[in-house]
Amino acid sequence: MNCQEMMSQHPECCVASDKVYTVAQRMQSENIGALPVVDNYVTKKLVGIITDRDLAIKVVGASRDATSTRIADVMTPDPVSCHPEDDLDATLRTMASYQIRRIPVVDEFGQVVGIIAQADIAIHLDDHEKVRQMVNEVSQPSLIPSP
Image (cartoon, rainbow, N blue to C red):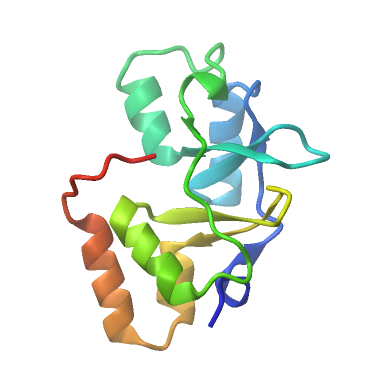
């Protein structure tokens, strides 16, 4: 199985200049936990990722003003990503290695074409042991810093 078979296509995205408050509202209304950050809405070249955890720790936990803080100030730049044709098992190992629950899928030009979330895998993968192993590995302490 490859990543294209598992990814959610055309994910919601944001840009680095967006305000945290606006992005958090979009995440709430769409019921999503992460947004790829792109250079602009036309080319959609991946430049970062913002997660609900980033918002909780880097904004709320740091007492930042969500209406004035930009996504660029709290996003993870240059996130780990995969390609649609990549082997899903290899991508799951990468997610476990970096302890990430979501991975953007980019084409050969770096344009965001999808996203794979741990929840997608849990819902769509019939191999319950593989799902259990992935969740366990992603949740373990690691010596590799998050990207």
